[in-house]
Image (cartoon, rainbow, N blue to C red; front, side, top):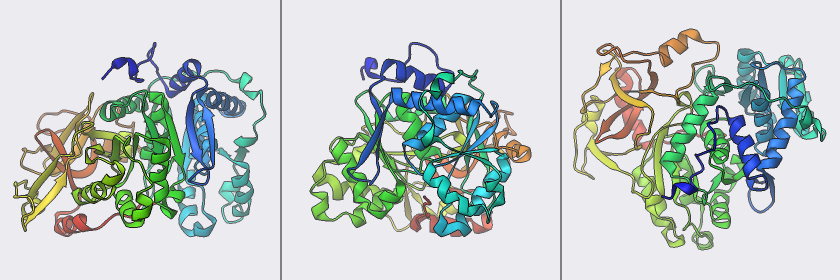
Amino acid sequence: MNNAHRFSRYDFEPTSFVDVLRWRALHHPNKRVFTFLTDGETQEVAITYEELDCRARAIGALLQSFVSPGESVLLLYPPGLDYIAGLFGCLYSGVIAIPAYPPDPMRLDRTLPRLQAILNDVQAAVVLTTSPILSLAEFLFDKAPDLGALQWMATDTVASGVEYGWNEPWIRPDSLAFLQYTSGSTRTPKGVMVSHGNLLHNSSLISQGFGMTSNDVGMIWLPPYHDMGLIGGILQPISCGITCILMSPLDFLQKPLRWLQAISRYQATVSGGPNFAYDLCVRKVTLEQRDTLDLSRWSTAFSGSEPVRAETMDRFAAYFAPCGFQREAFYPYYGLAEGTMIVSGGEKYTSPVLCSVEADALERDEVVPATPGGENARTLVSCGKNLGGQRIAIVDPETITLCPSNRVGEIWVSGPSVGRGYWNLPEDTEKTFQAYLMDTGEGPFLRTGDLGFIKDGELYICGRLIPKAERAVHLVLHQTEYPTYST
């Protein structure tokens, strides 16, 4: 690959994503960075690198007038360009951004408690949003006085010229950029502290794994509030200097064809999502609709955030082969919010690696090769190899020692992409982010809570770390059930 076309290289060493966007705005001012499909199809709004830099400076200047660096600011936006400008406005002012889902008036019993839990955790004094969201939010204040007590600011009404009052903050690689809150489906959500250094390193890993060049075009429908949609869909395009097409996740879920239509229309080369998204397209896209698509330029179809299944890849590749999709485009990877986003990944333009093992042995945490397709065989999809500058270890969760190669253990990760810990949770931070091996003393490691093994350098995910009494039931369900993906 011609290194002259790689956009991970700068004429200086960036220390923050403020540096990255400012460099892009200086060297590629008129290039579109994002095109947002407002209806999920043909209606679009776009923003250039220079325009995004200008809006970020304006919002940053406004924040600097009443918020100190290091304080927390809550972001409550629908997906779109206003959200991206608000996020970078926070980065440009040196405050800690708290991306969160806006409360859904139709599901307040589910969405409002999560938002209040986050608010109680971070003690933010300011909320950034849009004028429409602000007008809708006022009726919530009776139900949630803590929201009403905050200072709300609609960033879509910031006056022109405010950007000239912006003062560039002093941001170090270890300065916090934002908090990524865990799902909180079974417990109170935890805010993962992500630094600018974490983001810069993880973006370099994504560039390495995806092999991104100046010719790439991204297409992302994922929720923009956490790892895959936030880092992969918003920060990574800026890091690599490419154009990215965006749409709301609701537009995709309502009509999955829209995702593939956008890839086809804009000739996107990089796009993806969880395993369920590929299955949904096979089920919902008709033969007549399929015949209108051109997926021949789609060279990186990443899959992560939930178990990657060989049968899903087979079905999708076979169904969409007539419109140019190639199975080699699939790019399974492993990642998690505590590791910023990506941990391991494969090689571009190579078919995903598969491994067949005996299911019964796997329930005993043993890795025993099996004949593919056999009655007791379970086929696992590799999530690739360790990417540069970090370490992946497979650890016995009981003895806290390294596992032999034929054993399943907990996946531990160390390196510059590992977050700084959980916000306001020192005990959980020590337990999860500061683990050391008992046999070698090596550490600190991030304990992911995921189970897996490494074979021939390839990482395979087997499930979650749960009590052994429940392990067999979990492993059986893990083969057949699809997790619910929340938007």
